[in-house]
Amino acid sequence: MKQLQTENASIEIRATDRRAHRALVMTTAFASILALASCATAPTPATNPESTTTSNLDPKTDPDTAKNGSPQVAEVRTAQPRLAVTYDGGVLVLDAADGKIVSDFRIDGFNRVNPAGDGRHVLVSTVGGFQVLDTGSWSELHGDHFHHFVSDPTLRDQKFPAQKPGHAVHHAGQTALFDDATGNVNIFDPRALSKETPPKTQDYKTPQAHHGVAVPLKNGQLLVTEGNDESRSGVKLLNEAKTGGSRSTIAASSDCPGVHGEAAALDQAIVVGCEDGLLVVKNGKIAKVSSPDAYGRIGNQSGNEKSSVVLGDYKKNKEAELERPTTFSLTDTATNKLRLVDTDFSYSFRSLGRNKSGDALILGTDGQLHIYDPSTGKEKSVIQVVDEWEEPLDWQEPRPTLLVKGETAFVTNPATKELHTVDLKKGSVIQSIVLPEIPNELTAASS
Image (cartoon, rainbow, N blue to C red; front, side, top):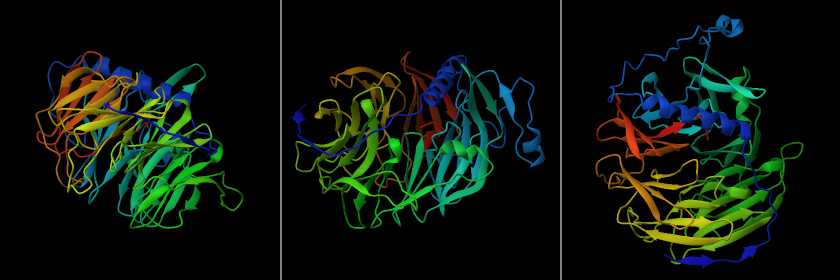
């Protein structure tokens, strides 16, 4: 393990925090999964794809939505969060507690899914843009408590146009969508997705199109990558949009070749990855944290806003057709020190996650879920989840995928069409569900 300390550059920025009430909703929702799933006596095969989740409470129908032909809405006693799972030619919506299929939406082509950020909707990256998928489960804050509702999921006609939909990032109460083909960025409040009229967007366009990412920041500021179709070099910090949508540049850094990915950490720190380390944006400054290798790429990161440490991958062979890494990175945004941890297993870009307490989780090709102390890099525990696997050459091909919510982890296994639910506190798989399709990407409606 190596440590590096780097110098700070003086770039003004105010980072952001998430809405506290939204975090509370989703923490409560996914905590309830464990109690429900632990009651399962044996893995249960998936039901009819057209089946829907029902409630033992009387439905409370909104007259207006019923009149317009919208799904019936039922108030339920506890939150009933749902998952979205892609497969070749469609998206499944599952009940997160028992894994049963609530809806099956057929969508041609290779589709990707991202949380919209409001705890209810998912954005499907598909032909023509980011299409809105209502998972049909949400919670509403009423004073000092929540009310929970369910309805049939709906794949809405609404779509945020994009020729090549890329990253979707929720931060500071806003969601930013990046079109890799044009450099267009659309920013909106995801809470408006529940309204009848489409959300109003603030739009920005990068000087040149590239595979990029935009991060909404507090006070209306925007962090956006810079590059073109041949290379990417850094980030630019923009102030709040003025009348007419124009933004002025506060500061910029070009010291980030191959810039890719983003993550948020404690104290409103934002991290983006580079082919030679990272950029840490915090407290009005941008710090370059350099890799110990000339080529030390950190292209995928996983953060937790209760932890100052960001978990990242780490690749050292620039010439590899596909490098299967056996080292990962831990970057402390409080000290701007990088720690590298060697492993006896490999992993993929869909292997990284963080639990509620901030532990660093990696799903290894040995089929085990490895849990690390982010402050020391020491392995705390290991949970066997799936059989050994190998990362496919094509990044679009299915591979075991990790999704962590609170103290619950969900792991797909394309080889067996299974979805496993892991109780991180118990340290064991508590439920395994067989799906009707080979699962690929996996997400929840919360960011």
